[in-house]
Each structure stands twice: as structure tokens, then as C-alpha cells.
Image 1 (cartoon, helix red, strand yellow):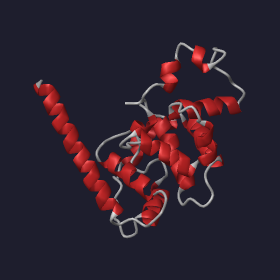
Image 2: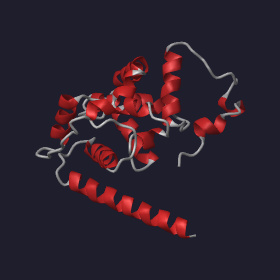
Image 3: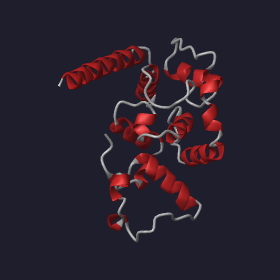
Image 4: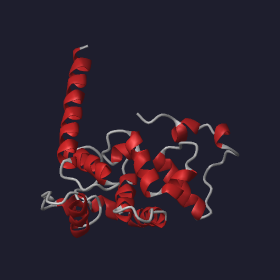
Length: 200
């Protein structure tokens, strides 16, 4: 019982820290469609959530440019050794390039930062948890909002609410003409829950 109470207390503290940091960032944000998303991504990274490298996979200059566009005057220093943490991504460079290309092909015109968000999401796909968790977001709903705003055409294809990471990899397979699912329909597949189950 004590362990459960302690876990709840730690969770409440983490939630409060995230809310405080997000509010701090939003107080300095430009009114832009992706500012709240970026504030959540930054807060999640700062709290040690997710798998994103410190520059979100964008490179130092592009990352600082994105921050400067959405949070003018905010000083966000990258660790000096941040590039070393990104080295495991190099082993999956081709996969990463394919994911970035898929997302950027569907990036919404007129949404500032959408092409950069494509790179961020692609890096999150290389993690081992649900995509919203690997991105360091607070909840799956934030990821759904991100996808619908930045990649509306692609998001519209996910009309059955498939888990986002599974959905993106499925899109890659379909574009390449690869069909790895053996079941004639999702409903008859023994792994239905893996693709469509809750993400908690």
C-alpha cells in the first residue's frame, strides 16, 4: 500500500512539474499552431521522458531555429555532449530517413514547423514504447492533435484509431508494396489488440 501511495505522490509531483514548465514556456510563446505541442515536447524532455535526443533529431541550428520561432527570447541550451546520445539512431538511419520522408510528404502547408515536427516524430518512432511516450508527451491525445494538425491527410487515413507507431510503419510497408500481415482483415488477426488496443 505504501509503495502505491509513494508512486502516486511521485506521479503528482511529475505532473505538477510538467504543468509548471509548460506554462512557463507558453508564457513566452508566439501564437502558432505548434507552440503548445513544442512546449509539451520540451517539458517532457526536460523531465527525462521519452527517447528524443536533446536536439529532437533536428541538429543544433535547426533546433535552435525552431525554438526561436515559437519561443522568441527563450534561452534553451543544449548539452555540449548531446550528439553522443543520438549515436544509436545512426544504426537505423535508413529507417529514420524513410519515416521522415513519409511524414514530410504529408506535412501541412501553412503550419509553421510541420516539416521539423516530421523529423521529431520519426525519431520518436525509434523508441520502444508507445509513440506519445517516446516523444515525451503527456498523453496520447496530444499526439493525435499533433498528427491531425501537421499531417492531416495522413492522419485521416488512421480512421480506425490504430496506434500511431504501428500506423506509420504500416504506411511505409504499403508504399513499398510489402504486406506483412497475414490475416485477411484486422478483425480476424490474433494481434488485433497490439495494433488497436489502449495505450496507457
